[in-house]
Length: 307
Image (cartoon, rainbow, N blue to C red; front, top):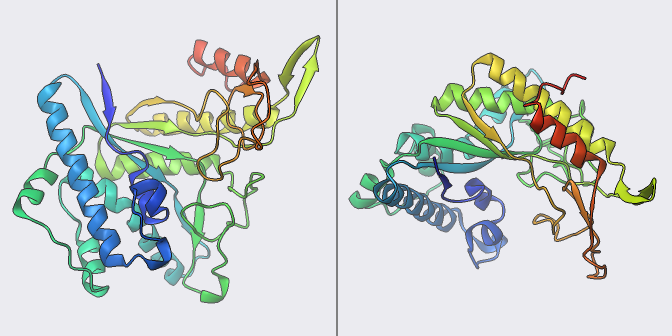
């Protein structure tokens, strides 16, 4: 059965309005009024695509795609708990509209308190009722939030902002590594929306070194294998929790230019591509150690993860 997605990481428009939403106004000059009006048009467009997709392909399943990043309170202070809740709601908004077909009360409150008056037609309201069949998402990291302004030091690598978690390690680009956060997201989304879920992006960007082993060029990327294994184990935990999960695809099978940094050296793939940040390289491809490992994971349907 065909599966379709409307917009990729639709909520990332909050933080990268040009890259994610095609909004030409520089971010620092973009008012919240204009940003959320653009987001409204995007949400309506997504609902319209869902409606048309269901009409043209009745057997298809159409979903939304969200950049997920669970946000933990930096401390047990209730004020930090509320700060984390409010931070997460900026991302929940997109799923809530896609799944429930209307703006949630907390969003309407935010609009009121920030002087945001969206132009919403009755046709818009009707279109938003054409909801998705499933929710897909990317997952790379988690973050923290606090009400204490003196502790609001933003993580260098977190696209969605957030305060670094002092209990977690980070990648070479500052993205904090939190396998259990994937289980948290899966349970949050399932409990909230009761729609099937699909992990469509998860992986580790790292600097890989091409070496020769027994006459074959490869990359000894045990760090990537460990990252993937730890995350897939948490997927298994979420399945045991009762989460309805359609599938998992990692980002990405072949090295490519990183969207977040425009670097080739930030590599995600199981296949090494001989290309450098300056454009030099032969474009030859070499299987990394993780290639055979992930091949065996697929063949065993994850049964060998604990080995």
